[in-house]
Every structure is written in structure tokens, then in C-alpha cells.
Length: 544
Image (cartoon, rainbow, N blue to C red; front, top):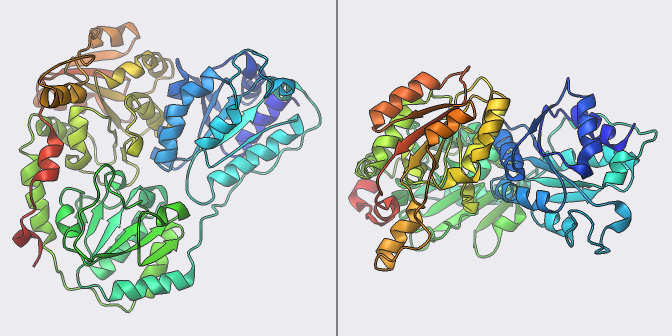
């Protein structure tokens, strides 16, 4: 078989069912290989390489399967790397397959088609592992190793480069059995024991759950430990869904401010525990214990009293066993009061809250919500209730504007019987409007809502507030989004009130939905973070 056929056959053996790609001359034999296994793998060709990696990311994070994208070298890979970077930030299992220039010319700077300097280094910088095939016989083993890496340790993307001569050459090639087992980082038993000693002595304990809990499939273990000890659980913005928001111990990061400011010991699971742009406001002298599958996230600038390098699920289960004889802590904090305090703040952020409420009311409980960086999306980070892991997807600390629509297309592809709802601003949606063609061609039943304020609204508001209203580069000229959608054969609609939007969503969200684009004209909106972050937590409401 050819190297391209070996690639496709080994991908099939590894359980791959979809590949998101843009074809090109360096990938001709790889695409032909996929044609040989089209009964096993669906090749989804997009209109831009950026969409290939975003779709692979949404596919992976919503389903815990592995997302695969395939692009030509040079500009194709560079276009896809924003999605790879988002996958890297969000603990997503994505295999990025990149073409290369012919093997004999790599590194020589001859100016061949799509050549860029040090491509392998660029791909390696945004993946946990990467390799390049030098001969057709290498291909199955490298694909197999890529999947070993994807199923080992911290979930993160990997990369594989395939020169066109390797894909075209043929020979006797041995395929391998697919990877079937996970290989998580097993926590050290002594570190578990030391952590348990610290946690037992806590008088005002709390758990802080990050995105690693969701990525590590540790939600059940988290709930069992929290319920056994009766400790409040604060979920970071990336940890939404780690615990059902309706659980009596669950707190969003807004309500959780009251816990972190008073807790004497905090157990951070699957989190960098840094607080993003602003440091977390902790009680003076607070100690914390960290559990993370990434050793780097246990060190500087953090100073935990105990650091556990290990898989979040295995670590939580081991701590549950170690603390099995430890009695539940008498409730030191009024969780329900804090939640009500946070809700009282959220409902005052209008008009955003009315739109968020319509989104949540219309989306079924098991539906997947892909949140974008838009005015309604900012409030959704705290105000949109999340009931299960992998049903809330965000770009994490990358803050990747424009990722939402193609990422949601990938999520819907992985979950064809689950309603998927994507929201974007009129700024962010512009990155991927051409993927309306992808939605229609492959009948991807995604419902997308555009909150349209005719601007890069967040930046425009900052210009108004910080620079005496001097505006530059933030006003947008938009198409008729409804007419544009219809020109692609996608249903277009418009809603002008939350009630109208809710009605449209109830009508269009469903297991057999067609692709739909809903335009929602909105005015400029207030900054929600000022109220969410700066409103002081009433101390009497938090501590019993």
C-alpha cells in the first residue's frame, strides 16, 4: 500500500470516524487513502483550515473522542494553529496531521510550494508530542504512537507531519492494532497521604475545580468526595460542568468568591490556580493542596503545601479512600445564601441576562452550549447554568475570538443526536461565515445565534470608557445575516426579543435539526465583569 493508504487504514484501526480537512497537492495521496476507507471514515472538507482544527477540538471536547484535522504545510498549518492552540489550552485530544514539502528539501530553504522555516518546531511548540514520517513503513507506528500520546497523561493535542513522497511511495507495510487503553498519570501514594493530613485539619475547607476535572472525566469522583466531606465546590470558568450547577455544594466562580476569601485550606483539582488576568482573592494565610496531571502546573508561582502529580480522577478516588474515615465537616458556609447573592447580581446585568435566560430555557438539559466571546457570552460564563460535563465549551485562556461557530460544528458532528447551540457576536462570526457551506453540505444540524451590535462591542466599549470616546477600528459593516444564511441553503431567522429567541430555539433545537442561523440585533451593552468582580461579598452572608 502507499503511505497515504497506510495513514488512512491505521486511523481507522485507531477508531477514527471523522477527519476534518482541506485538500491540497501535498496531501493528494493522503486524501486518496481516506477514499479507500470512506465506509469507515467520513472526510469533512471545510472552507478554511482554521475550521478544521476548531471542528476537531469541538468534536473531542464534547465527546471525549479524538478529533483529527489534516491540512497542507506552510500557510495551511499556520491557519490551523489557532485551533491547535485552543486545544492545547483546553486539554483537548486533537491530532493535527500536516503535510510537508518533499523530504529531500526539508530545512534547505529552496522556496518550494508552502515551505516555511522550521515548520516542525512550530508544530511542536503547540503540541505535547509531534513527529515526522521518513518512510511509508513508519506511518502506522507513528499514528499508533500519536494515539498512545493522546491517551496518556494530560489530554493535549499532538502533531504528525507527512511529506508527499512518503505518502506516495508504496511497499509492504504492517498495520498495528489500535490503542484501546488509557494511560493516566498515577498519583504517588505518599503525596496522597500528605494531602489527606492537611485536608483533615482544615476548619474552613473548599474544593476548587478546574478544566482538568472535565477533561480527565473526574466529575463523578469529584462529586463523591465533595458529598462525603460536605465541602463546597467552586468551579473555575473552565471547570463549568465539573459539578451540576444545581448540586447543593456547587458554586460558580462568582458565588465562589465568598468561599475563597474565607477558606483556610483549598484543594485545587485540575487547575492552574492562578485566576487568569487577576489573582484569586484568598484568605490571608490560606493553604492549598494541588492535584494536576501536568507537573508544570504544580510549581512556580504557586506555593502549595502539598502538590500531587496525577490524573484528576485517580487522585480524587485515592483521596476519597484515604479520607473514608474522616467525618463530614460541619457546614461553615451558607452555600445557598451565596448562590442567591450571586443570582441577585446576575439578574441585574441587562439586557444580557434576559438573553442568557432564553438560551438556557430553550436548550434541553443534555444539550451542548458553545460559548463565544460576545457580550451575552461574557455573562454566560457565570449566568448560564451547566448541568453536566462536556456540555459547556469555551476557548479557555486563549480567548480565541471566532472559534465558536466551527467548534460547535465539530461538537454537533460528534453528537448527531444531541442539540448543540452556538452563540457568537457579529465580530466573531466573521471568522468562519464560509463554514455555512460546511454545515449545509454535511447536514450538520447546528443552531447558531449571532448577537449583532454592529461592532467589536467589547473593544468599542473600552474605547468609550478609557479614551474619551475616540473610536477606531471597532465599527463593523455586516451583511444581512438571514439572507446570507439562506444563500447557502441554511435557514435564516431573526429575533428581536428574548421571548422571540426562545420560541425560535424551541422550534429549531432537536435531535434531527437542520442548520439554522438566527440574527439578534442588540444595542451596546454594559460591562458585566465590573459588577461580577467588584461587588463586595457580604461577609455575614458567607460565613456561618
